Length: 351
Image 1: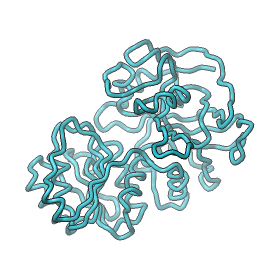
Image 2: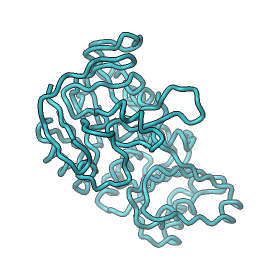
Image 3: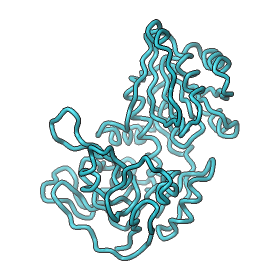
Image 4: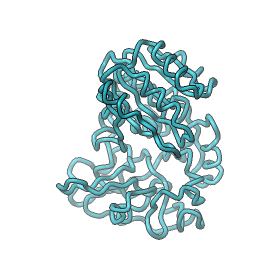
């Protein structure tokens, strides 16, 4: 089969013939139809993201994907050849221990989970991908007519969905999405609508991206200025003190927006952190104590999140159409990575 191979981040990336993966216990072999790219994949491939822990040795990059199962392992019972599936990169060991190993296949892992990412090292930028069964979700028959590249947009939605589950977002609540002008943040707005939020406050800095969210149902936009007091006031005045917030800011060099979002919450409000920041988050101890607010870190999503999210798509509650998608042939990965990292770029999907 054809596959992209990376010797290591910062090393050689090549597209070549490699042996088909052998199906093993607890796995399925998936013929990939659509593999979406992370906006920062070029930076990762070129070794610029030094905090990431990749698999040891050569591997195939690529995280999510949509495809059809070709072969199922001998101990696989609920998945079968011919099923169209969504593949997630988030794998967690099934051991009954306090802190099971977890990794993002073909991307990164905590040092304590090095053995797991080395076991599941190869990703979706190949004609065939071997995937652990817990990361593979059948796509409902109700979505048979939806193109695989469109369903690949689920990769942007499942991460914030995990954040909202952690945030205990309830129907009718007012929720802030901070970082709503980014790839995952804009998808988070769609997910919040699908989950029944009474009002979604989309907060971000880019007016062009905010304008694209303005027409969505139950969405109000707030342009963040970097002035903590002014931004706090604007968020509170948009729809009353918010009940909860999802912080999806990416590689922020300032904590001002996150602090404004936290300050805007009502007493007892919740904020989930799922973005990234290059500076510390200075939290006022006494203020958090008095207000009873919760600050929750969250990494990824429960194992059943893709299945639950696909049901929202099938029901019509979650509309993937507002997520722009462009497709390129698998062989054109270098150009696709450059396209994916452009500000405001559509989701780039390899087919």
